[in-house]
Length: 280
Image (cartoon, rainbow, N blue to C red; front, side, top):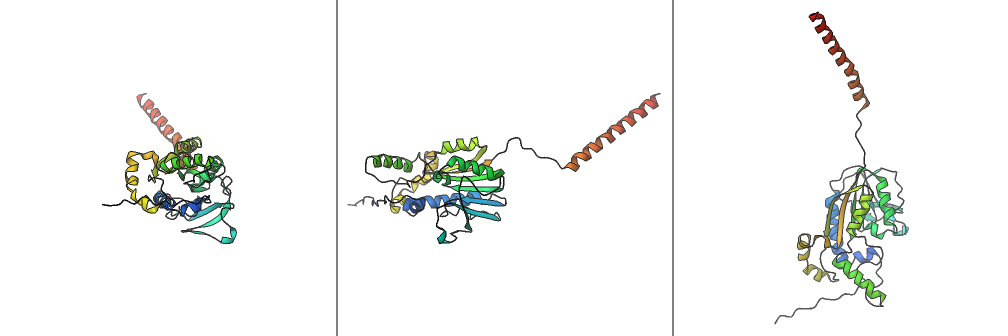
């Protein structure tokens, strides 16, 4: 008779509070692999001159982008200066800054990527407003975040309730506030962003073991069809729209049209005069 082994329970330490530490776990590696594929696909065909990744150097979000100037910015205190420049694929950390006060001029960047930046920011509203400020018209922002309305999100909420009673451990990182997908869409709409595409991923149950996560790989294949908005992570691409923007013609083009108009009128008048003279 076959014996079915019970899932191996690997408790996560209650000391894990950082996103970087959590990414080293089995579910963190699963999420990181899925998001890396999404960023590679999304930013590869976005063109321009200047691109910025704000936060999370563990995820090389700009590695397939072909813009000549690409920077990685980290929040102050997120990475000790003694560690030296950190390599994140083809992009190196260029500056330490506050996400709500970026050191870039208005309308100077063509692309900004925010891998879990908003949920880890102390003021996500201000961060998103600052992104809108530095983006050029028709510039793009690419955002990933953990979905509270998912199996992982439900597990996290239950763990928070248990911790209030003095027991239980969190499944996801405890720092940051997870922002719902529809809530984020409302924020983008208020800032005149238009969501170009949205997708969800990581439909597997909230398990700690890599082996058991792999056994539920079939849920990632069926999830987009059967329960599309219940993925544990969402991925959005939005475009900055500027209302009332219209193309201006070159000055010489308008002048040539204005100069040609009297000539046409003169020829018509001359033609009319000849007709009157002939009839007389």
